[in-house]
Picture 1 (tube, rainbow, N blue to C red):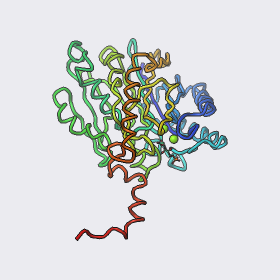
Picture 2 (cartoon, rainbow, N blue to C red):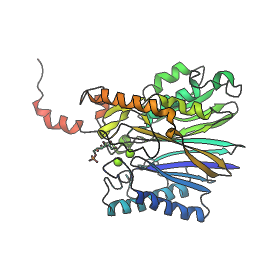
Picture 3 (cartoon, helix red, strand yellow):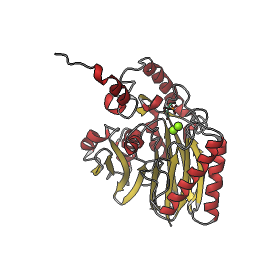
Picture 4 (cartoon, helix red, strand yellow):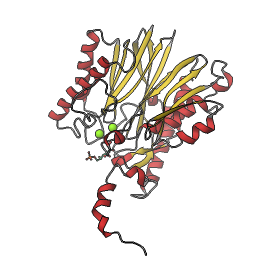
Length: 365
Ligand code: F6R
Ligand code: MG
Ligand code: MG
């Protein structure tokens, strides 16, 4: 049975500030989506949140980028924005950058990750959702999962993974893409994905047989809008077990609280802390950035789950390390490398300050 799994998300209002989602928003979203399930458009759905982002996890048979599915998500975000406005939540409708829906939510503000596949005898999927960070945050974890034998021992000792995976990498500034085969091209791959503000891993494929393994949202809100309008807060779907890394191999990269951009005003680097959905409440200096992981088994497209994978105690040390790193980073105040480098600050307050002071800069000679 061919199934499409779509995750579409947007920040349509925060409670309180940018720290959390209001339960009324989640309830409204469930109402909207339930109707689509009753009408037969969806097989199943799960509505959840990561920090101030509303997450719509949907299964159906319409294929990726289907207009009806995108319209359902857009209409849901619009209806939820109405609720957010009534409650005067912070930044109501902030990720809806267009006035009206025009066929596809890509480029209109919401983030999308989707994949279509033949459901396996046991179809294990993990859905990652992050808050207070940008789309390139998945580069390092996806590298570890599918190309690093020190993370995924299956690459070494499981014959069904020994031929490796291929990575499609998007250059979001030049609007180009390129595919790298691993393991033979890992050095070339790392040249690019080690610069995650520009190059982002989009889908990952099992090479032999060719099969979709992972798919991430790679849109950069600031590039779409040409100015700072909030963080991308990306999502990523990963298939697990069998020909793909085991659940433990998929989760292992997040034991490192990697440094990502997106903390306070989208202008600071901070550690990505793996947490349960309940703990995705970034409050300290509007952070530190969070990532949640929901695991499902699919049964004829039905979402059996979720299991809240980072609720497990084995991630306590990663959380402790993230808090220690947060202390250390915060002591840098408004200095790089806690604060983002100048090129990235272009999308924040930097241009206005430069404009204001333009006449006061004089030549050194
Ligand atoms: C939002 C974020 C926050 C806000 C900050 C200012 O994702 O990272 O740090 O940038 O709270 O928010 P505004 O400008 O909405 O008052
Ligand atoms: Mg927000
Ligand atoms: Mg957010």
